[in-house]
Image (spheres, rainbow, N blue to C red):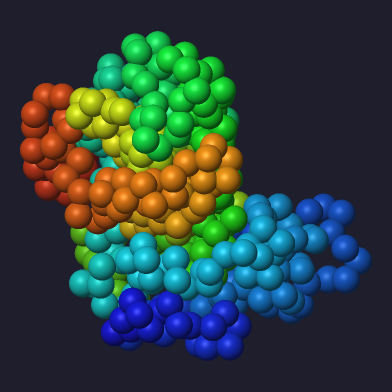
Length: 400
């Protein structure tokens, strides 16, 4: 296996990205061509894209940008990445390469896909949201369907903005050792600074996150779900029996119908998830404010809920969420001290020390420690795949 150090040394466009044995070479291929596409037709057999098309290079990127509805096709040469380290240094930092469909039924990718399918069944079964994931206070009474709506084409960071406003209204102050305060009520270095940093954290992360998306090309769950449903992917390709059985039992006929949204997933690759990457408040906000332990938990719960709700909606694998959450933290950790030094006159060394003390790896984080009901796991995880599917049949009243 390729080590994380080796990943960081890969040169985009010059070194081949290692592939797992048994990789089916299936990659993101949800590409919609414009009706008025350029007169120059796309090359023969342009679709579906496969493992040979990623990382995306200039020739493919030109077609995707010019003739399709694909989102933010960013290459390492992009202007917004001119001061950034290699995308592979970020991929290494967030845990390494993602998983892809594989001919081995025991490959970790199929567990990722299983978790997405289980989340869809839970959503259709009207399983209470608090039985599926720990929720921040603003979401504590919501259903899974409502959570999916919260993370559907919303303004970036809107939910975190409301939580920050709640903290300010409750009297939570800035850490004066991080952002100097001119007076007891420094409007500019308090409320205005929070608004600025909220936007900054999303903006600093988005270009590198999209660069990672178009580097790896992980297919969306809906792309895999419909291929299994239509028998284009079967046990002969490595799909586990239980996954075939679960998708056979579900009531959808199109890839979009697998998801909670009429348009399905956004038009860009799955990994890392951008909603997750934009959810880095549990680092930057904890650095600049004097948060209580309860407030810190609320921020982590908000980060996680915004992230995991995208799996509930059927548009992301859990691996996308964790990598995205870590990507947001990594970008903030690399840039926040410099930003605060030159924007607010902060002591860069002091800021970096607090960053290093507070940052954590979402792969190791037990988010249930913050559950207000003091539970230790998601209740629906105790149900087997077959039990969930039987409940699904009951909901649709067409069970065996």
